[in-house]
Image (cartoon, rainbow, N blue to C red):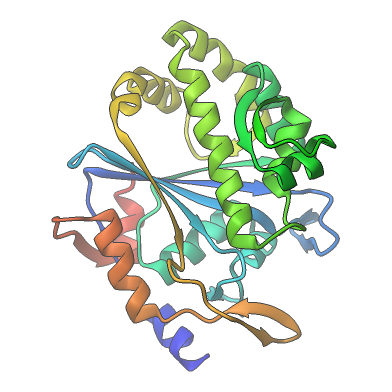
Length: 282
């Protein structure tokens, strides 16, 4: 815990303006452990995936952040990473990720499970390859294969954890995001702009509509990039217990090196105090 306090006090983070980091956050407003914050109950985050767009190496890193990671939440002590959202919403979660993982988050997009279901339905569903166990749990069939999932089925698949581990669960979440990307690759820019009008009311984001339209205009370039999937911590860790909760105790020196090698390969990123970086975000 002392190491985390020291890490939080060290407000230097790394960034490179040619690398654009978007944090995708999934929440469930039915969360039984939601916390009252400024008159509203805020849920914990169910999934956190960093989309890091590297225009230097033409690669998109899709990196899950383990929700059980034991981190320092500014002003709220040391807890599981997914708890941060309950203490201040997406802004607190972003602050927590930046303070612990020492990477700049340029933008965030947060959606709850009902909104995500509607988004998947809006694009006409997604095509995902399921194992026999996954198919049994999601569709009630024991046959492995490639299936077209509607919104409700995609949510059930993304949240499935009873058959294996939380790390495997994050892989399913990334599989759905890849399936959404594959579906959008076949769409015209005008179609995606139309979808944007449907999606915006379903999410919370610090993107303006103009900024999102600018991102849509870049999709041809993005779709030409290779996609690399990963999870932090990269190596599985045994669960420990803190305050009655199962947590992952990370070796932050090891994770720092891995994160920098992953996000900034062959690049020497800049560093700045948190307050300076916040003021220069796109």
